[in-house]
Each structure stands twice: as C-alpha cells, then as structure tokens.
Image (cartoon, rainbow over all chains, first blue to last red; front, side):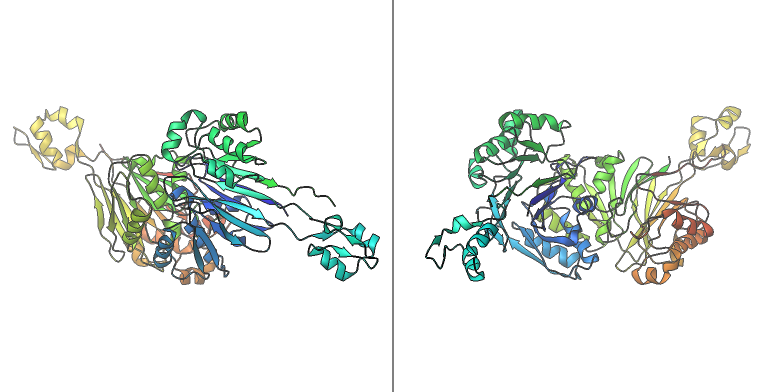
Amino acid sequence: MSIAVTILGNSSAKPTASGHPSAQVVNVNEQYFLVDAGEGVQRQMARCGVSPLKLRAVFISHLHGDHFFGLFPLLSTLGLYGRRTALKVYAPRPFGEMLDGFLRLCESDLPYQIEWVEVDTTKHQIIFENDTTEVWSLPLRHRIPTAGYLFRQKEPALNVKKFSIERYGLTVQQIVQAKRGEDVVLPSGEVLANADITYRPYGALSYAYCSDTNYSARLAKMVEGVDMLYHETTYSADMRKTAKERGHSTTADAAKVAQMAGVGRLIIGHFSSRYKDLEALQAECREIFPATDIARERETFLIEPKATKQ
Amino acid sequence: MSIAVTILGNSSAKPTASGHPSAQVVNVNEQYFLVDAGEGVQRQMARCGVSPLKLRAVFISHLHGDHFFGLFPLLSTLGLYGRRTALKVYAPRPFGEMLDGFLRLCESDLPYQIEWVEVDTTKHQIIFENDTTEVWSLPLRHRIPTAGYLFRQKEPALNVKKFSIERYGLTVQQIVQAKRGEDVVLPSGEVLANADITYRPYGALSYAYCSDTNYSARLAKMVEGVDMLYHETTYSADMRKTAKERGHSTTADAAKVAQMAGVGRLIIGHFSSRYKDLEALQAECREIFPATDIARERETFLIEPKATKQ
C-alpha cells in the first residue's frame, strides 16, 4: 500500500532536445492517476511501462500548454486502444470548452466518455474520494488559475492483534466489534481497551504536487507533514525577481516551503531550459532542506509504508 | 540548390516507445517547410538541429491527430521564442476552427500572426508560389479530406556560357538578351541560337509527399517523374483488404505508384506499430520498385542537383 510517483517530464515551457514538459503518474494503492500531461506524455508512459489504459483519472494543474498539450493525443490513443470506461479529467476552466472542441472537431466517435470535473483553484477541498484515497485541490499562485493536488491514503481499517485473539479467545463477534474501534467486554467483565488489542496495518501516506506557483506560506500550511512534496523550482535562488514576476519559484522558495511544512522529502522539477546543471539547483535546496532530490525523467519515487506497532 | 527532406516521424497513429508520428521538414533552396506535425514534432526538430524559427510555412495533409497534434505546441513555442513573422498554415477544413479555439483559449497573446490557408483536397493545383518554388496540392484517397503536397523547384534563370562570352566577345546587352532566352545577332550578321550559348545552372528538382492514402492511379499521374516520392506504406502486401478499408496503402501499392510514375526514388513510411522489421517492408517494395528506402527517423534524404551541360 505505497505511493509511487513516476516522473514523465521535468522541464518548463521551452522544449529541449532532452527533456519533456510536466507530467507524472501517481500510483496510490495500485490506482494510476496522471498529473499534468505535457507534450509527449503518452510516449513517455510507454517508455516507463505504464499502460495508458490503466489510468483511473487525470488531474491538470492549469491550462498552460506545457501542462496539457499531451492530453488530447493521449485521449485519442485511448480510443484507438478501445477504452470503454469513462475517464474523469479534473482541470480548471476553460478546459470544458477545449474538450468540446476536441470531441467535435477531432474525435466525434470515441468509444468512451470523457467527463470534465471543474476544479475551483481558489479552494482547498476534497475533489476525489473513494474507499482508500482522497485527492485535495491546492490553490497555487500562478499567472492563470492553477491548482496543485494532494493525494492522501485514508487510514486503513483496524486489524485485531493475533496475540489478543488467542490470549482472550475472542469470538468472531468480538473481533468485528474491535475492528469497528470499540472496546471489548470479556465474559469475566474485564474490559479490553480497543487501542490495546488493535493496530493499523499500515500508516496512511500522502503526496503533494505543486506546479506552477509563486512561493506561498499558505501552501506550506496545506501540505503540512506530507510524506513527499513535489514543488517546482523553475529558477535558481538568484533569480528571485524573475520567478516572482513570472509566477514561479526558486530553489530557495521550494526548500522553504518544504521546511515550513515539515515534509518527509522534497522533489524538485519544472526546470527552466537555461539550467544544464540540475545538481547545482539541488544543492541550493539542500542548504535549506537536506532531503531534496531532482525529479529526473523516468525515475520513480516510492513512498513506502511506515512501520506500525503490532 | 537541392531539396532535402528530414524525417521527424515515420509511425502511424498508435504511438510506440521508439517512434514518432508523421512529420518532416522539406528544405527547398534553403526555405524550410514543415509537412505534417505529429506529436513531439518540436522536440524532433531540436534533435535534428532544425530551428523552428526558420519555418517558412506549414503544410498539414489532414486532420487526424497523428498528423497535427504537435502543431499547436510548436506554434506556442514560436511565441515563446518571440517570432514576429506571420506563419501560413496550409490545411484542410476545419483547421480554421481549431486554430480559432487555440488562439482564444490557449494563446490569446502570440507575438506573431498565424494565417490559415484552406487547402481544397479535391484539386491538384498550385497553392504556394514564389520566385524559386511551387507547392501543389495532391488529392489523396483517405477516410477524411486529405491532400499530399508536391514541392517543385522552378527552372532557374539561364546562364550564358563563359566560353561563348569570350569567343564572340558578347556585350552586356547581348548577355542580358541571351539570359532572357533570345537569340543573339553578332555585328557580322551571324545568329547565335540561344540554346547554343546558354545553359541552366541546375535542373529543377521535385519531391512529393503522399500520406495517408489508398492506392491511386490518378495520384501516379500527378507525381509523374518526380525525383523523390514519399508514399505511405502502413501495411505489408498481404494486408491489402485492411489497407483498402482503412484508407491506407500496402508496400505493393506504394511501389506500384512509384513504378507507374517513373519517380527517381521512393521513400516509405507511416508504418503500423505491428511491424518491427521495416526491412521486410522495404524488401516487398524493392521487388516492384528497386530504388526504395525506409524513411528512418532523423535521417535526411537529399535530392541533389542534376548535372547540366555547360
């Protein structure tokens, strides 16, 4: 029950011969979510061995081309592959209008439904939820309406300790009670406190994707304590003014957010094409927040389940 | 004064980890034309060392995504690069509607004009012309309106033979006359026939791009005698029925067109993702038309000036 993030692209808008624009696959409990979809995303998925048919939903941060130009080609290909399951695309306005144009002019005959879910980029709220997973929107500060996305595993159901079952000879009914979080009263009248006889099989993990954005202290609050934070670092620390003007962050900005939020690990990306030496950007972050790594393309970052007491 | 064709993609619609969809750069007398623009075209241009700023015009054969999904990202990038020169895009309907949507929803602030020129895919006619070059539309037989494009150098102006100038002591005025194609009368009354004292510095070259299309004898007529023909071969010879149904050609179809048209050389591409062994497809063509080569990605095919008598 881990979270795995596979980087498909780590470049900002200007294309380079070697890099791809923003896109990543977030795998939460074997549910595959595509987060942003820069040009070439489907080819990058193929190179990373992720079948596009596996996609459960798509989350687009904002409608600058380097974050979504690869989506429509991917949606076409899903048609060629004969996808039948509806696909939800979470994106800010005016994505619906783009989708309408695409369906009318390019793909009037797709074998599956595409459902646009409008993301309100001003609100921090749950936008996707099922038994195991929540996705929250994160208001970001960019030149156009932009949202980050926070993926949270839900706390798993309680397990009853084997030791307790044997020691107290618990009945099936008592085990069900304990799993519901209730205390158990033995025939002798002894009360077994729920916390003493149960445990969580794994700790709930979390991952936040934040691109593109200016430095935001408010954002640090919203991603407090996440296990892994992807935060854009379009610019080096000395480019603070440019970053601010263009709605982007520097290395120092990202590291400061990671530090304030007390995250487990910081992954940096969305690099301006001017930087050939990404290690230097990483070093700038590490001065402030040591647990920083570069989001290298085609690399997978695994958030492993935390050890729990049994 | 050559024609050079750089292959940016040779795959058909289903994307693969190794191949790119249709796109090529046709360089006629140092004028760069983009012909089709499948996804990833701008990155492929970067990898081939062709600056997108050099593009003189774009020609789109038809509006299936694998032939144009890379165009809008490229148009955005030209904005980032600060292009000021208007760019003409030749494409069939409803490209204009797509362009309007793109400009309204994605790029309301581009620093250059994009002018759509509607291509009538039912007509074989000149659609682009300047001092040195003509481009003709070629009606193709596909599932939706589709045009191929025929690039023709114009015959260059006549040069006067150095030998004649010296031997007859030609005056500047007489040289100008000869360059205009006129005979020259010497003071002695002797008449120098224009053909004897002039030559063309190079032969006019031609290249035809034909994708996607069913076999067409009419097409063979239109591309008669071209120096190089790119003809799609989506399928192997045994897939004739499938090819016909889907508006595509087999290897045998393409080779037959090349043979009937008496072209100088056949380049094949737009391969179905089912084929790993492109050599086998080439071999099938060569049985009918020996001068066949595979349009390998990032390879440049040069049509060199023909030797002329001086």
